[in-house]
Image (cartoon, rainbow, N blue to C red; front, top):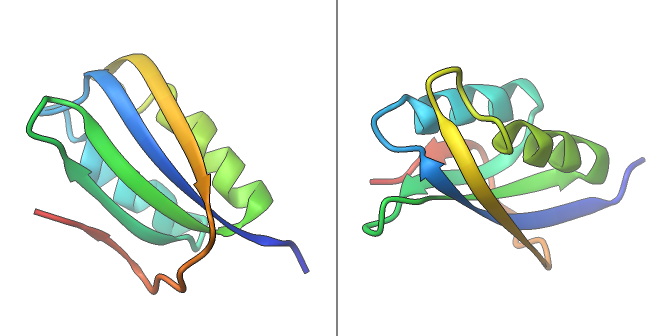
Length: 92
């Protein structure tokens, strides 16, 4: 069984108003990851992913591109201790 990890990701660029959150939720759910995604007031998108390391790393790779109409210019990743997130949701 793969080690369970948690990553907090902040994505910068044209990432609001391009269905980034909805697509991110769908991609995370396909990977059976837990956590959340939300818009930040400064125009960035923040997300937390919890699950097997390989799936979280795959999701981080997806975040570097995002949905087709996004233009990601920067991404930061902070590894944290898992907190037992359940499900994946868009936070408002």
